Image 1 (cartoon, helix red, strand yellow):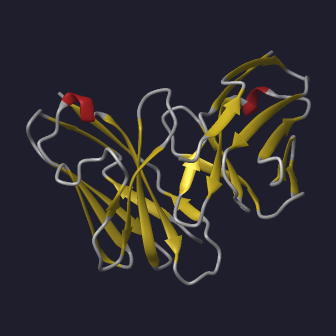
Image 2 (cartoon, rainbow over the protein chains, first blue to last red; image 1 turned 180 degrees about the vertical axis):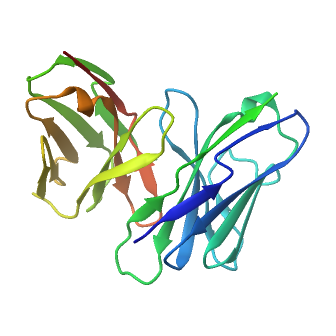
Length: 117
Length: 109
């Protein structure tokens, strides 16, 4: 149980275009989802927290107009990188909390590698 | 701002040896996680430590938590090559997880 999927697993896009990444909880309802970014050989940095049906909360320094997050259902959150540039190239990982359990544990997706050329 | 520091950042050790990775954090928390990450992959959950004095063991890995000292350790016993990976601790402060800097472990035959 507690499986999180991401799609696509990797994507290459041209500078200036937008790309959407999906994060799905497959066997539980995710009341809260998180988006992380990881640059090569670095740690995970939280970008934003999203709760189903409400606006995402962005961490300091993360541009909310550039990284659009939509958590429209209890099993799906999307991250759209708008007007992508090479410096946005990174490994994006989502996680989700199971709203049906009392534990706070986050379940992580397999990640999406974004390369902007 | 919560800071989570791991040391060492890099660890190269011979097979069969023991070593400990340390995770220090700067604020009160009753919950800490350890994860493993292989190159190009996402995180694999290793341990959830839920209270002061918690100790958990799985195979050659053992994790402990001292909430008063704000310190967690990940001990590796008789290392084998398969343990080569990057290990992260993460501190849970209800709203979010804050990850440590990571320790890149390389086991040398």
